[in-house]
Length: 310
Image (tube, rainbow, N blue to C red; front, side, top):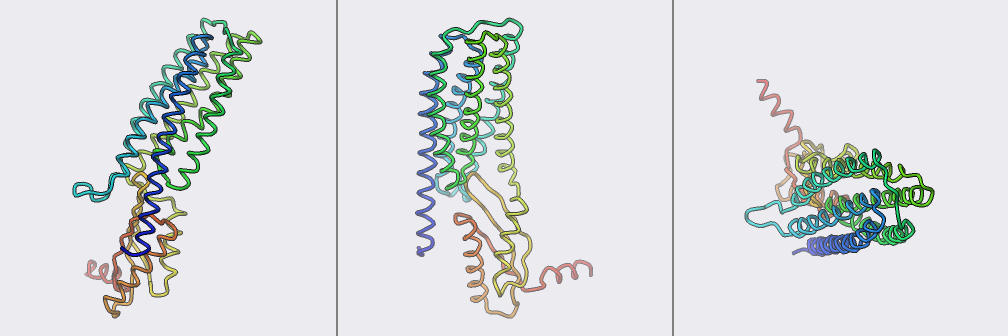
């Protein structure tokens, strides 16, 4: 193993540990919030609090699925899965999206029913204390998840981060609903808060579904990322041209493939060395990427086209 390969292996191991810690932290926080919010909902009967409780329960389910997916995704490639297990993360994301969308529908119907038959909120001050503690715990988790996402690019952690970042906004809505309904007597505020939370939950489900679907369908990188890769490759003085750039993500795994055109008269050993140098340039942009490079003699695609026309 070369020094660079050893460094990449160490970096990958650290990233895997970070993702696992993030999954465990999310499960722990969700459990604490469920216990607190269950007590607050039992005291108040608030539909907005019910929405927050339901969201935390879903967070626990989603975080549990994420933790299992992360453990599967970080498993090394084997004989049956030569490209690794990274797609376990977006598969889990699709499951999360379905569960979250169902919960949003349930909460929306419950809130509409509460608009039709308003209920007075009791013990709102106790509920406010619960939400305040929930905000502090959620904020700490969100900041840690943001750090992990920046280091690993994990879609599973990103999905969890989306849940809990949305929770910050949801808890703020719950506070407003409790104040307006429990203290100022505006009964409809609680139901309206529930409807807004249902909308936020549904939007989060759509974002998770879209990101997971894109990865499972091997969607290409954005144009800006592709141009950065092309610029890094073409900056090598011996690369005449490049073509057939293909990119995709599978969880936190990145795959980049392309052809480079070189002087057709150079020795194979030199072409191989240039290919290694080009790969190193690409890995400066994506250190953990699996980069596959095919060498073509300069002008090869044009000659193939000419033969095809003939």
